[in-house]
Image (cartoon, rainbow, N blue to C red; front, side):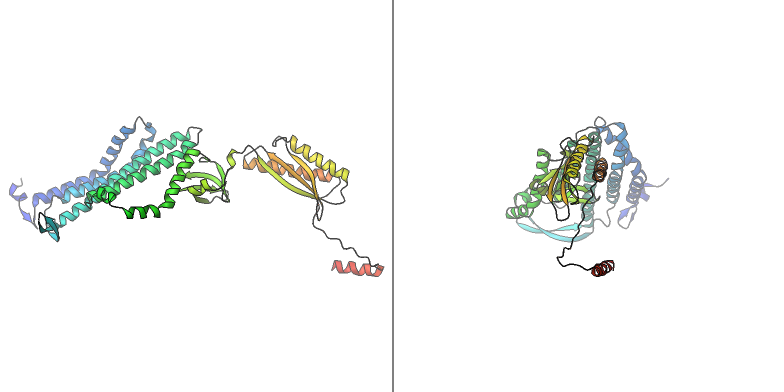
Length: 391
């Protein structure tokens, strides 16, 4: 057996026992960090067992394994390194500190620097775990929200997720200032003074957008999934965040609009409409008789109002005498809101209008010009003009 004096031997400022403790703690931490992280994840999940069902267990573990592994690794490294005295006791620099009425030089050792670095990393990893727990809670809430018909909760969950994560990040920031850098946080906050006012003015637009996001949730001019049109941008709302709203356009691009613009501008919620309007003008040739024109208008109006995909308030009317033809205006509303079905119905009506015009011995006008001359044209001149036209 090894004698106790063997462990008391000193090499490079540390005992053999300290080296064994350093290696043993480091070895156990590296070997069992994965197992311990999964075990701790499952133990933490029990706190949320009533909140979620067992099917979310894997998602919870997947979110927490990595940050808990890093937390365990940092803690293991910190405990193992602190078993050694050398070179941790070596002073790096000195700083003066007023103690009583005299200033004294306080040494800062390598160990002090290592402690601050590890404390910084451990606090970061701890708040990383908290942020992942918030991600899991929002994951469960989004799943439950998807089971309901109300879209307001689908919009509220991502917003609350960002809100709580922002609060946690601010708490983590001030925790680092207080524990690692030994800053008096209360004195820092109360001492901002004019600097705080300047920061508030600089963040004016961000605050306006934040207030706009709360207005959107309270007033509910739209919800996630609605088809909206604002400032010339038309698309489906995918997310309402702190500062902006994301809209997926018909070209499948992502448009990001500030929340302030969403409530200050003219916003059309196209999902709330009960029909889609179609309006256009067709031109008929001037050779069309008045009787044929009346029949064409009557048949178009009758077909539109009897179509199962339109409302019964469609109309067609003789609008004006155009430069190239007789202008007939057609207006109707399609009750089918689905984009694909809407296009099919509009196509059916357009094709039927073409058939109606042909059946009544008329034709569609197109831009033409007629040259009228009062000079008699000889037969030879006609042929010459015809040749020029042909050329």
